[in-house]
Length: 372
Ligand code: SF4
Image (cartoon, rainbow, N blue to C red; front, side, top):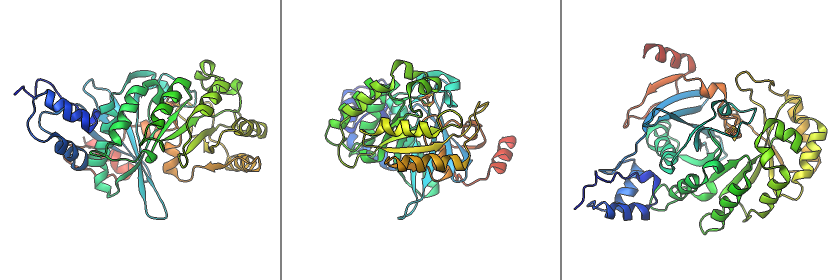
């Protein structure tokens, strides 16, 4: 038998079939499919397998929303956010995952953009965020993670192969079993990336994967001024990519619109956005701008948010506004890395097998940090 230590396995980046094959190649004994199930369902790491990242630092963000950090072997960190979502049937939890450390897209309203791109995450490091949130952090609160949104740090289409592999792992029936309909990918609109997601959506089992577009502007001039990627992928190209995207019933398609005072919030802007979206079957999600550090813009007045939404509805566009504070935090790519999230207010370092309560108020968290 070969040594399992000689070929380290990173099972969080593998589907069950891949894990079985790689286990056999490594000459491991035992029942790899059972080990895989135990890893994803009970959090038991199989012998000879590596998770590589060192969980977990948990941070209270605001209210019931919480962030946790995975520290990687190279010292860089990944942020993920757990957001309780009140529903008629009870509270569910949404996990907002990162696909990169930092981001190269340079959106001017975004905190993460200030970091630039440090590196891509591997599929196992993306899935590790779900695994840690499920087995090392979230278990303490009693809620299981229901939905996963790729709206954390990074642009998913800029790391699309690893993102797609991570999704294949997350939906695996022998593993995490997250329904594709509970997963959303948010993108600034790379047409090639949208086409690759479309290829995945055409596969059986992935028809109901959700796509969200971070639009944020009514025309190319404004969009290019706040989202430099628009110069490479102007809105007409984006629209072609969206119209070509396979649409299966019940899959949600959201267009995110961060409302920034004096930039994109005029009545004429609203009319222009609605005209752009007219032949795209979608929900327009209006998100009041959440000022990043040193932001050139303030948050919009409540009356302006209401005016914009009322006008979009009058234009015949199905329109929603983010409701709760927790949702505001994750509302769109680029709204995640706001100051409240990026400021490190450490509650505690959490050992690999010790869940943490996230219910500590911020002042207590600061005290804990001082004592550390
Ligand atoms: S908004 Fe999203 S795509 Fe734009 S810089 Fe921020 S993380 Fe990147």
